[in-house]
Each structure stands twice: as structure tokens, then as C-alpha cells.
Length: 403
Image 1 (tube, rainbow, N blue to C red):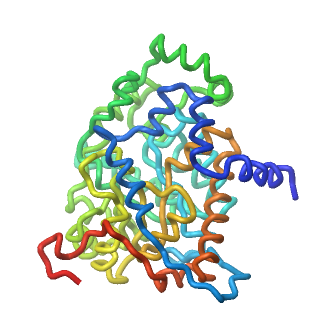
Image 2 (cartoon, rainbow, N blue to C red; image 1 turned 90 degrees about the vertical axis):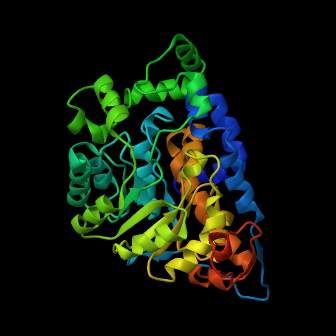
Image 3 (cartoon, one colour; image 1 turned 45 degrees about the horizontal axis):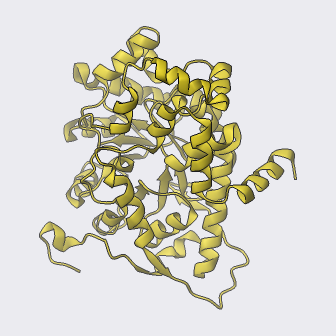
């Protein structure tokens, strides 16, 4: 066992649960960075709803099965990955842990799982694709100015860089109120206050990482902003967001020649519309509870979206997923995979640069154990499991016949 492998094994013993990472991260980060990871929209009920809904999904285990050779690998869009788990995009990830984008890319490549790098990451799509050539997916936020000129240019850049899948994000039609960030003065353009400087002084690991890697910036936006940090942050504030209209998504579909997904699909009619445009899959997501605190839990919408998609496209779940058991829950309900963001970010914050690898290993190990405990040896068998899902929305909730 090499030195890193031995260290990772020790960390999985000393930090076996997400709560362990949360407590350690809270001690190592400035409060404004920790709150940015942990915060949600409005009263943050969306965060608790996501977790409560996932935890309510029960799986009946089967025993008497030889589970000595559990295989967690899964095929997504014709490519085999070590597990049906991807790292979600996290905007401005470098402010939560300096160097986060690069560390996520390297960990995903090593683990052979998808990395959905975001428009607002702190490394460019070109750099990420060079670090993770086999597993890079690209999440596109809208830049609507001048008929989406920059949206299309970013799409072309991702294509040239070799991104495997384009994922257009639907669920940010407007900026939302995130009370923790407002209280901390964490707004764009980001400026350090005296209080923030005091928090940084008490967060030595984070400050050392910042000094080593430099001030993070929205790297993909530098081409369009034409300036340094302040000008780029102002550009992001003024030009990124506003949502994608279906007409623009149709043009993106025509432009992008590889698999394309929509992230933020919560209504079955939107899933149908995606299919009509030739979209190859959807990510059922309420943006991790960070956009609209009245939205249902993502997992509660999953079965109805799976029913509508009816095998005509890939369905993945995002929002509230924290480990391998949640992954199996999603697979049992018909998803082909999951994305997780907050768990990976907390692992970096808690454990430093090795944290991303800690979380990729933890997800795979937990999924393998959950599959064995349930009596299956391949992810394709998950839909045979018997589940109880009390919060699931059905056709009747949308005015159609139930069942």
C-alpha cells in the first residue's frame, strides 16, 4: 500500500461520516467560506427537505446471495465509469478551498468518475480537460448578452477541449436570497472586509492554501471580461444567469455534437420537452436547495421523471446526496447515477488537498457495501430492489391518472 493509500484508509476510519467532515471543516475555514458551502436559499428548508426525503427512502435487503464480487461500475453515454457518481459543479469553488477545481479534476480522473466542471469554476475548461481527459463533463450557465454569443463560445471551447457531455443548467432564472452570504457580506464583486480578514487569521489551513495558490478567479470568464479580478467579478454579476429558454437550448443541441443533458429538471413536462429537442438526458435537481426553498426535494420528483423518460435518455439525481447509500437509493428508484457537490467540498475543506480523493473512495466503498447488503452485485440490478418512498410525487399530482 502506497503512502497516500495508507493515509486515505486512516482518514476513512477517523472521518467515516459527513458530520465528521463538517465539524472539522468548520474549524479550518473562515466562517464566510464555510457558510457558503453549507448555506441555502431563504429559510434553508430546501436543504433539510432534500436530506429528509432521501433518508425516508427505504430498501428491502435480500439475503442468501453470493455478494463476493460486487461491481460498482456503470456505463453513462457509452463510457464505463468506476461508479455512477459524479462531482457536481460548485461555483467559485476556489474560495471554499483554494485549488479546488484542479483537485477535483485530478481526483475524478484517478477514480474514473465524471467531473461536471462548472462555468464559474476557478480553472478553465481547457485546464480541467487536460487534467481529467477521460472524465470531464461541462456545466454551462447562460450568458445571454448579444444573443448568447459567449454561451456559444464557451460551448465551442468545451467541445475543442474534449468534454464528454454538455450539461446546460436551467434552475438559475434569477439570483436568489442566501441569508448566510448576505450576513457575511459575501457578495459579488467579492471584497474582503475587516471581519473577513479576522476570520482568515483564525483559519490557518485555508490561509496557507490561499497563499500557496493565489487569489481565486472565475477563470473561464477572463476571456470575456477583459480584465483582472474586480472586472471579472463584475462581469459575472452582470452577465451570467437568467436561465435558458427552450429556443436557445435547441440551438445548443444543434451546435453540440456529443451527449447533452439538462440540469435542474423537476417537472415531467420539462423532461418531455427536453426529449423533443433531442436532449440525451436530464439531471433531476433543485440546485442543492440553494435557489428556491419552496421546491420539492429532488428525490421526490425522481420516479415521475424516470417514468416520463421511459428509457429514452439518461436520468441522474443531484441535491442532498451525501454517500453511497443515497446513491443506491437513487439507482433503486430508476436513476442511472448521481452527482454530489457539498460532500466533496466539505471533504476538501476538512482534510485539505487529499480530501477529494477521500470522498471518491468513500462513495465507492459505501456503494459497494450498500449493494452487498441489499443482495445485488451490479448497479443494473438496483431497480429490482423493493423500495418504499413516501414522499414521491406521482402523475396524479400533475393532473393525470395515478399509477
